[in-house]
Image (cartoon, rainbow, N blue to C red; front, side, top):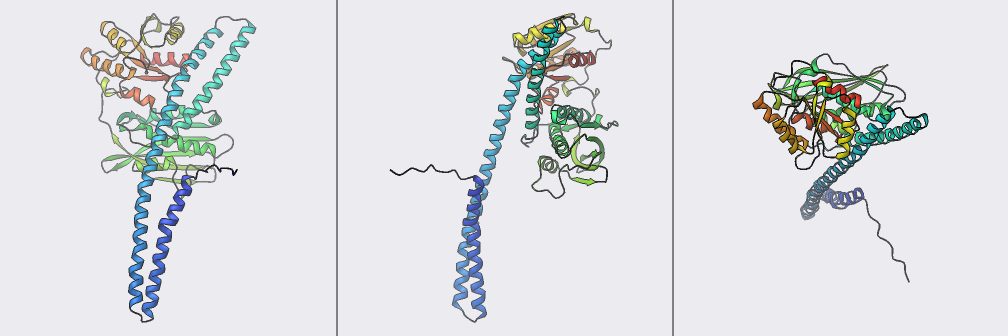
Length: 443
């Protein structure tokens, strides 16, 4: 009995190559051959053969044109399918990141509190081991976040009010998530230009910088220092031309001269209407790129996170932590209790809301100094709740700071929070010292 051979899948690139060869190159070659026959026989003084050869050369050309059109149509369909797959992958990774950060956050916070509870040397050793293992898991999740940030789709997003300075600083913090970049130093040389407000897509700027910085760091051994500078470079078609300069203390390659196809950074710069230039000196490298941005109209409080809080007065007297009444909006009972345990020794009072709807109802009947808002919740999400709270504040002429405490730590999550009116953002696992620092900065 003969063995049945298992069919072997042919790679898509090989299929495209065969179609190009059989459907386009061969018919074109036949057409050229017929044209050569027509010219040769015409020079020999023949009449009918050149005419017949010319007519016959048209047929393979028509076949080639039809094949080209079909190939273009199929290529577009494949690109659309690949884009859809990429978007689904981003959703899966985003969901995984959110779900794993919740328990990691609890482990980090509980470990920290146990470490301060006067444990015995043996117990402290066990606590330190748990914290070290949790820290390794956090690093793995952070690296996954970084890899996804460099492979996000380039679909345009809605306009967001942003400042370049905080956008660059947040990008540098994202770069620190990858332990491969620990030996590198990225510095933002802010001379005040970063405070100008623009309206557009800051996520694109982050993607460009992450791609350039990752390429430069990956292409060198040892420690490298990269300085980022920004300046306005005139107007272009009614838009502000903004120049970004990345300079390194060692020779590195950010994109590479004449490289094709362009990496993500190159494609994003070009799609933003910009250009770039890369040069290397004896002791370092420079990468200068331009993109066009739309300047935002001036608002009264440049530090405000959103137009929804424009014109709202801020608290004049700075309060102490012991004086604060905080609304914690969190649907997970375990997360609620752990956050309470962390803050109760320092905060006067903490009230709980299980979702955005409860938070909105409580905000309408009570006065709070600050709101800690989860993002993904049932009934009403934190994003919708924050936007509605900012709408209510327009009639009360009061402003309550909102900090997003969320397991959403993917590229663009911070911008979503700020766009609906939140004042700041911290991702899980939470660094307690950083949270207190952010609270102190807003009260």
